[in-house]
Length: 126
Image 1 (cartoon, helix red, strand yellow):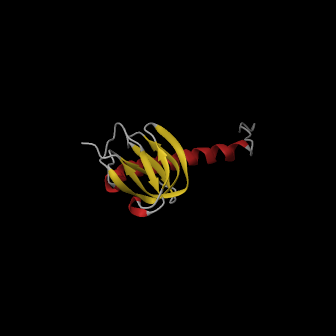
Image 2 (cartoon, rainbow, N blue to C red; image 1 turned 90 degrees about the vertical axis):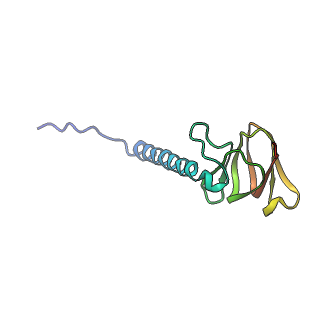
Image 3 (cartoon, one colour; image 1 turned 180 degrees about the vertical axis):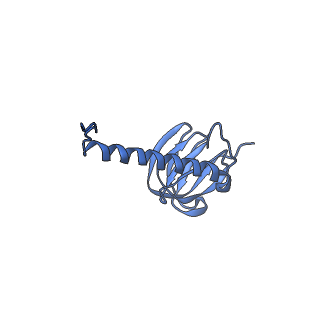
């Protein structure tokens, strides 16, 4: 009987499996963050997603919908930040938006805030 198995290159398969695992983990994290958004101080919005997102020091994606005033950065904010609010987000290393601002991020902007932030102030509009 003839062997009809297809040879598999050992270098490519692990890389593909790792990439697939990373995509699956990112999808699960984003889904969990979207369902946890109301607990983080926002309102759930399945269609549009959070207005403000960041990756925390806990390696989780955190999101807020329609944030106003001073908001604690749950999970310790660091790394990628996306501001889809209508106002400027001002980042502070101290809780309660205390001390000097370390970064300001205008509407529609994505950036890195390093090394971390503990709170963010958003404009309060009527």
